[in-house]
Length: 343
Image 1 (cartoon, rainbow, N blue to C red):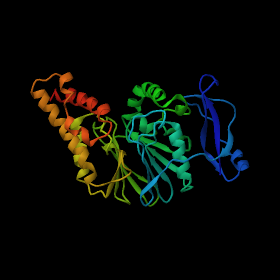
Image 2 (image 1 turned 45 degrees about the horizontal axis):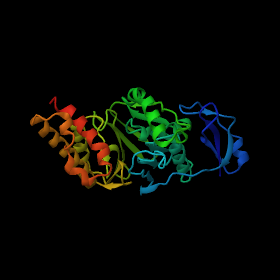
Image 3 (image 1 turned 90 degrees about the vertical axis):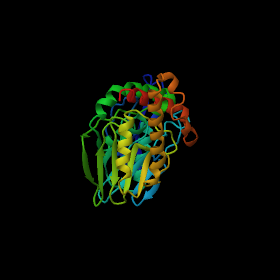
Image 4 (image 1 turned 60 degrees about the vertical axis):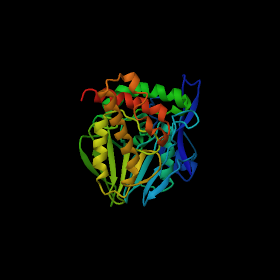
C-alpha cells in the first residue's frame, strides 16, 4: 500500500524536515497513488519543500478494541518529551456502517497521520467527524489531518476562541518539549460545528450523542456517548492514574462528574490512563480526588491560610494514588484556592 506525502521543513528548508502525510490518496500501487495526489496545504509549523510524492505506508497508531467497532489509542502517562513525541493522551475511533468518527487527535500532526493509517487498516469508510473534547494541545493538534480528508471538526462553542488565545503558547511549548521536528506539519484546527448543548451524529446504524458541559475540567468540555455499546468517551472529564488537571472550575467538574456517574454506561474511555474503565467504578478515584481537593482547600481558606502555604498540603494525602502528582497537584490547588476563596 502507498500513501501521498510532502516534505515539510523548518528554517526556509534548512531543516529539520519531515515527510507529512497527505491523506486520501492511498492506493495499492505507487502509480495509482501518484494519479490522485491532493493539493498541498499551508501548515502552522513548517513549509512544504518540493512536490508531493508517494511512498509505502508508514507506521500506524496502536489501537485497542474496547467494544465492537470502538477502538482506543492509549497514550503514555507522562509529560510530553522528545522520547514520547507528545503521545500522552487517549483518542478514540468509532466505526459505523457508513462513516467513522474520531474523538481527539493527539499533540501533533504525526499522531493524526498515524491514527489515519490505523483507521485505513480497519475500514475504507470515510472519516465524517473529528470531535474535540476540549482545547488542551495534547488532544487537538492532530485534528487537521482529518479535516483535510473531509471530516467535519466538531467542538464546544467556546473552543475556537479559547484555542485562538492560547495557540501561540501551545505551539511554542510543544515544540520545545517534544522537539521541533515532531511538530512539523501541524496546523491549528478550525472548528466547523460549534456546539452549545447536545447533538446526535449518525455514523450509519450507529449514533453518537455529544454533550457540552458548563465550565468543569476546562471551559470547553464535551463528552461523547456511543449508544450502541453503552460507552462514555469522556475526554478529560475522566482521568485514570494520571493526576487530574484542573483548568476550569472545581465545583463545575464535581457537578459534571456527579451527573455522569448517575448514567447507566457500561464503560468509559478516559482522556488519560487505561483504554477503558468499568462504570461507574472507574470514576471513583477521580471523584475522591476532587472531593479531597475541595475539602482541603475550603479548610485552608477557613483557617486563614495564604495561598502559598496552603498549596503545599492541599490534597497531599492523594499523592500515593496518582502519577505526575507534583507536576499537577500544586496547579490544581492554586486554581481551586483562587476560585473557592470567593464562595
